[in-house]
Length: 149
Image 1 (cartoon, one colour):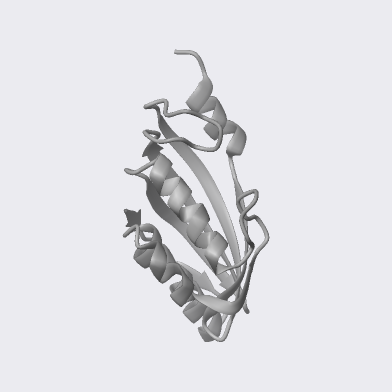
Image 2: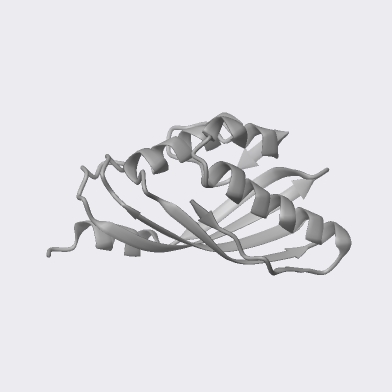
């Protein structure tokens, strides 16, 4: 499930449309678990600068990444906090919450709940996501999953 921010900060009408497209990607793909919908938002030459290790950097890799996340955290929820758009660039800040009930990388299911901040950076071209970078509190996530009780 995704909670959307209604407030998109943009420097132009085109930037606002790009921000709305990213918010739509969050809502229609990340909220529904319909990973097969991801390619509908991605340009034919889409490039993910942060692919899952061993996965391709294209649309197929995005599907692999999302399937792995939602398989590990089936109750996962991205709460979209901020969307800032300038020109062809969009930044989306979100909070991911979920309970790990499936394998996550090399971690066996822990049954633990996590709250992790994400910042995603996108470049759009012709209304499609063309490039993606992200940064998240990986250390905090691992710490929440592995810290002794």
